[in-house]
Amino acid sequence: MRLLVALLVVSVGCRKSQEANPEFDDAARFVLTSFDAEPEVLGFALRQMELQVYLSLDVEDGGVVARAVELSPLTEADVANIDRPDRDLSLASPVALAGLSPYGPEHHQLIQFLDDQTPVEPYSPDLYDRDFEVGGDCWQDQACERMETYNILVKESALYSIPYEFHKHFRWVDMNLPDPADVPDGEEAVNDGEKRWAYVARSWTSAPYESENGRHAINQSYTIDMWIPRDGQGFERTAEDVNQDDGEWTTDSSGGGSLRMLALWHETIVGGALQDGDIATSFTRAGIQDNFDAADDYIRETYFSE
Image (cartoon, rainbow, N blue to C red; front, side, top):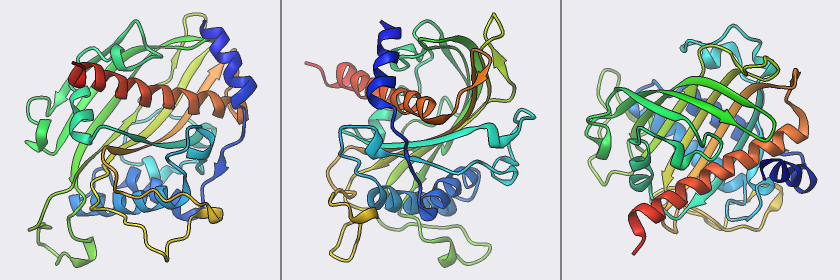
């Protein structure tokens, strides 16, 4: 069955992602590099990302191609503050995919507390264990801002099985915090109005991992993942807003649920060859969408079924 799915992806989904415009590309990097920054800086970065997603992508489109972009490669400065493999960053293929979920960040965050992540990880059906290193007892409902986890899993596809491990850290951020430029030096950013809670996850590998036969490997991987509420408090479309390439979609921060956006840079070896190009991108897009769908299915079946 997995081989059949893979062949279908290649036959109907092998289309090149559009290249991200410079503003979108900068916004994605800004979120990645601001993960450890002051809350108002990360909140500002998320607002820029939210704007670029709604203006650049038709997030209500049913297909993944219209909701995906190809980012530029990472630089040393982008990942300078994390422990990573000694690998050439230009080999890490980039792709970003956005979409909508009917469930808010407050529902999605419940998934992050599963010790066993296999119910929401279709490409790790046999092993995906999560160890909570920091914040596992306080991150829920913003009782603390940060949670740090370490994950041990086996990544499965139609082509390979690779055991690997990675760090995944989470942060809550109030997107209604003031802009950094409006916060006096030495003072803490304060939002005296309604909070707008989103959360972000940054994950990465610290070493290369390969399959038992040595023909397949995940040499490096970096991900930034966002759950932004569609509560009407963010980007609100006006007549002056113009979509990329004059697109006619009208989606904005209203509508309920969450805006999802995941950006991934990965160097994966399959059968001894670097997995890159349009076919690799099609597999990656489909895999991200499958994860999006699995999360929505789990929330619906666990918390909303009769």
